[in-house]
Length: 477
Image (cartoon, one colour):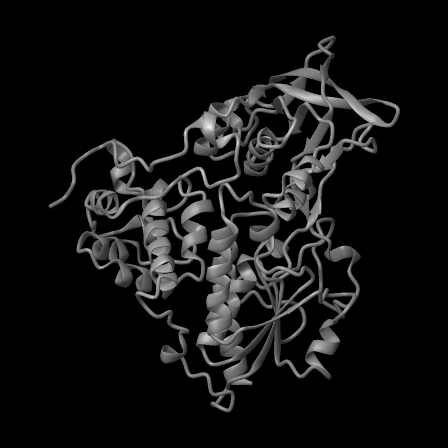
């Protein structure tokens, strides 16, 4: 029987006054009864736009939800695992409001089906049952030919262990190829590991899903950076790889480009979140992430700015956190749910304001010189541009400034690319859009390193597409 409720089943969450004092996961997850109730809201519609239009990896959304309604939670998980390598991660961090849930038919007259929460539920339940010894984790070897001598099987190098690289590696291993992931960090996961705070994505969740790749035969080599420790020539030459996938992302933070950013107390959001994740639950280390900062200013309006401001609230000694954004809340690109949770956590938002200069004394940040803005009339694309209001400058007190305005590619400064073409200006890899092949035969690229910063699931979609093309390339070689 379909659940006709238009409001849906809300996931339990830590209360704001409690969660700001810890880094535990804010959303506490569905119970089995809640999951079934929410799954029954799915209409099982014939066109299923949630899947065909909203999911870059084409998860079989109606199918896995139907299994939930029947109480077969493990089968629901296995259905998801056939198309995604990170269901517990995507269920937490994907911008569902723009993708699967944004295309849900139920959203036309109420709340869409909570697809992400259901995905998270079945993945979390699977993990708990494996850890409790109730079920045995499958390596995936049963469904794949892992004989390296099989016709067409090859040896593939994947650069980067972020979402694109993990998805590509999983599909290639399932197709019978020998896959090695190289990453310059010591912990796998890319931006998932060092760029998302634990109150949104706990370490154990990511680690379990990556461990599944190791069990499926994917090898990992850490501390190996393209351009320093390895090169394309070496990979395709003496190291014996037949193909390479480049999924190294966009790891260089963009700066504000205003005076004063050299002062102590100015930090990029990427570096801030990296240090925070490295500190873990160590109170002493957490206190050193934003030392002596009581008032923190975050510059930006995207999801990284939300992660930064909500993390800053939780840092020892911080009393006030303000987000500075040069447009209005209507233009803010952040996930509305993340914005709402940040507001609940007493983050202050200052709209239509742009920073002009970071002020300091004795080498440390003391404030931020700002200017008020107004929005122009819409241009040909419909976008309203922020325009400075003359004479509106003012000073905002701050002890620390976090730059959260995006990241860019480091490819242009990298050695060892050995003839692979880059886009002019942005230094992104140029690829054939149909095959994701680069200018060098046998080398493919996908994810942020091709498109610039996008979503986790978009990068995974690119990784899966590249895996299909690499498999075709190897079997036809």
